[in-house]
Length: 274
Image: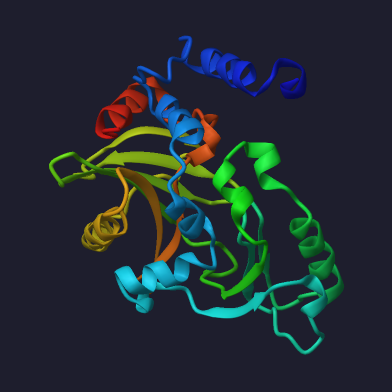
């Protein structure tokens, strides 16, 4: 359908179907309109570096320190570099050039299956699917990180939508993702984190009040990561009272993930000062 209608019309129809309004990215009033505007007109060279899940590690190290990085086990340039001596057990494997290419490996790792999946990732053109052009300029590689899973389950993902205002202050929307890749729940909180203002999924989106100090700390870290941008989504994990960086995202959902609801879409658009 996308190939028949063309990228712009296909996205516009999807936007209208979800928000009952024809999009206007030249006068954006909704968050996804601003994401789409960035995709078409804003090609900051730092998006390439910081969306690269390997190169961003140097950016994080320089900005806030390497203690927030998940320990890296391997960086693989080519699937043929993988040997039987490599230890993939209890790790998380990711491709650096897009979203969704994540493999949680338990202690029953099968090297043949791993190589087959990674070979598919290395030939996958993520930009062809998403139209997020900065990913096309990333040299494809594989990274293998230590697992942060608890009892085999991924930790809660705390996504901080970070908006730098024209006066240098910041506004935040916290997106809590629990049960990822299984019975997923999502809850959305404003900076005060007093109440969930929007949610969907399996209902496991309540924020642990004891983690608020750590999330406030993550907000301060996100400010430093957003110094070069007017908007970025910084993802964090909190495991054993330690904060770990996940990734930086500049065009969430390729402007086609209508998960926020119209009210929150408008709030987030008002926070994003282009």
